[in-house]
Image (cartoon, rainbow, N blue to C red; front, side, top):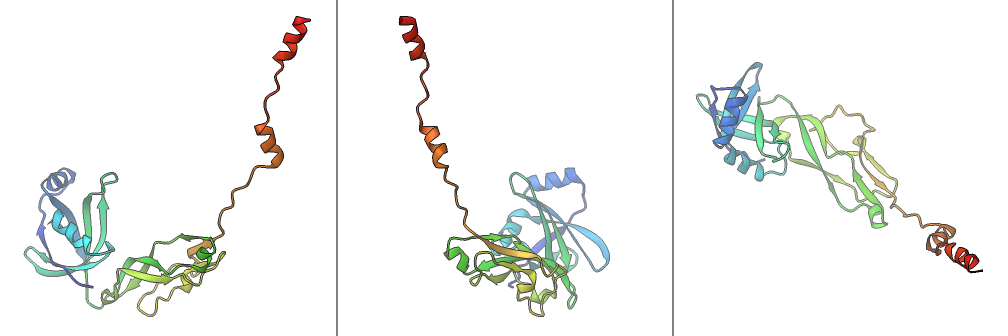
Length: 215
């Protein structure tokens, strides 16, 4: 995975009001933690950080930053908080990477191929879109491809079916469903009698009353 270096300034003024002012000025507040030390409050240029994300399919990535007063630091983008309406970045959490020490991350699951059951009219349902794994930093990937081409209608793909190799381990139950193929929905046709009843003309009772009055 290609690394992109960012400039991180230490942030002395903290609190929600200062964070709002920072965001209005085009900044992005964040924290860097790890190594058992206290978290360091930092700020980035939101535009530059956004440019980094646009070059990756996943927001879980490792990158180099130039931390003010420290120098080059390799970090994992652990979490990005976004505004619930606009989707704009509000805050970012970064984990300092330690060489040779495993990290816990969520990796996207990318379904590849067309399921045999889908070709027959079935519907694919991707239950899990990412998987929580533990791996060494050097083994981190943006996504794990999952081949679904052999799945027929009624089949389910489980965690135990994934080829994670020796690079990734997960604590998820082996029978956790990742994706399934269900039969196509068949719309029920209305019963013939019900259809005839719906199309039948309503009985006109006023005519009889008019005739009786005329007599």
